[in-house]
Image 1 (tube, rainbow, N blue to C red):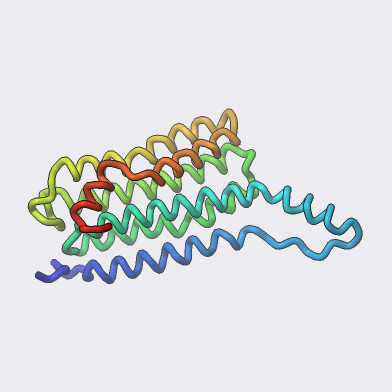
Image 2: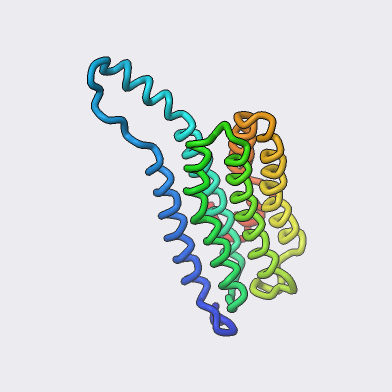
Length: 213
């Protein structure tokens, strides 16, 4: 059975594009951490002070890198079950990658303005957009089993949908919190990312049905 339909690219081409975009976006994040120039007098003391002053850059880098990793894993997991492609599905993925490539800019924004609620809100809005479009990709593929196997369990579809939507919902809270305490908002972003490090019931379902060890 062909994995292309209605003029869409094969799903392998979409996956290859996504892998490349994620790789570039994750690499760009580290460019915002500037190496200090040679110390003129105080030497190691000045270097230590400069490195300490870069903590917003390191925090932004760490959160954003792992958030991108989480969304890459989510996208990868979806494509284990997606069998075909069509033109609307192709463009949904393009929109998803559009917001993914914006994350390095959003991360740079909070690196430079970590104490400004607008920067925190812009960052959160970017992450919400990525999450919601990832949900749209899954919803489109699974509605009426349009692009997946007809026997994919309904409960598996719903569990995956709920897991995708948890992050955008929490990020809304993080944005609101940022107008009162920007550091607490960053902690919530990081905590949300760490939540996805642990397997859920849907992950176990995917593992069982994929034959993974």
